[in-house]
Length: 272
Image (cartoon, rainbow, N blue to C red; front, side, top):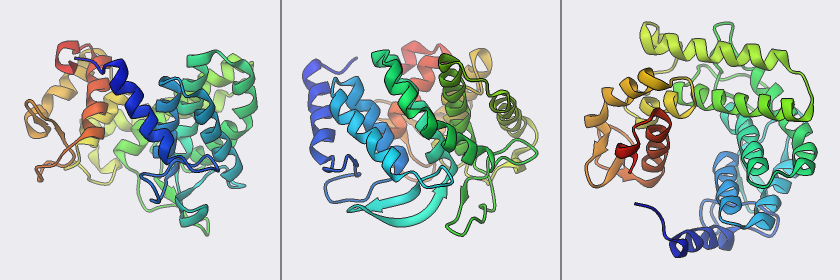
């Protein structure tokens, strides 16, 4: 089962229609925006052939990056709505930029965005604990959040891989990033085996179930075993994936992400 070209075009057109003149992509027309979903939408635009609109989205990210390398949590109508700095949101810039480069092989784009990516990743790694976890946020006064999140750190793992790939493609050496990548993987791995206290308990959310696979911490047999553990808890046959275990909601975002995780793990039939 795949999207038809018409369905893909309709999806991408809908995203382009809500993009603001300044390049920002809100959740919906006149809604607020957050950097992570904005970047997801930018990747969709590029994948659907809307490269100009995608690059406008990246220009917005560059223009709104804060001096410390992060972005605010929410924006509305060109202004900051929530000034919290989310580590995963900042790190995801590396994933999106690398994705855009892979689609078009535009080295000039990668070179232009490198300073933004570098500042973002350095901000994130300032929030890494000695145990490897990434504290989820920093407030507007510079105080770090009180805990780390499994989903967030797993996604940061993916973003660090993309950041390292970007650095290597441009001839830059960032061995500190490589060490941090290993530390994140170690922290997530230990949390999944015998140290769950490393992360704030969020196991009612399906993202905590599949993100260690989606973020590339687990692969092969370990990934397949992880996805088998709570399949019946979150997967509604013929429908999709629940957002949380204790509610009936089946959500498109979680369903699509699980499809990617299944494909990465080799469970291609289940992904379809």
